[in-house]
Amino acid sequence: MTFEFKAVVLPNGQIAVPSEIAAQIPAGTQLQIVLTCEPAAAADSYRALSTKLSEASYAAEETVYDSLA
Image 1: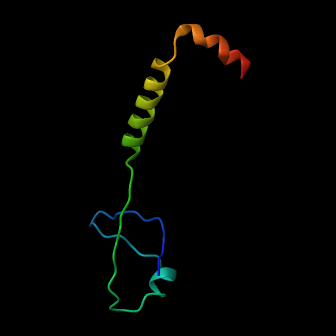
Image 2: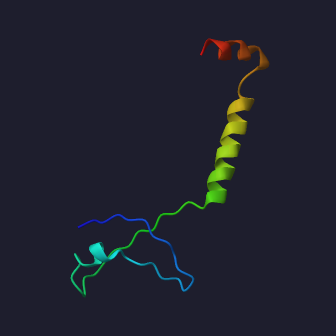
Image 3: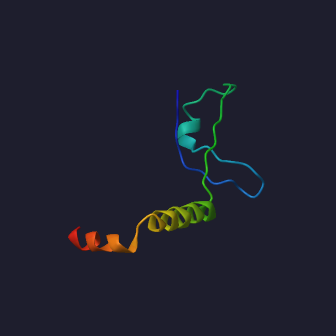
């Protein structure tokens, strides 16, 4: 079985499993947990850098094409 849900890490380090999901998992079941997260600051930094690099790859003469879009 695979379940996907959003959660928040509590100040004590715990992550709560929604009750409707927990009810479907028998007690004592071994779980494999995969956590993915993207801190907002990292996403903003990445977005700013990719925009800067993208803009740097265009020559000033190419702005004429912007009006065609």
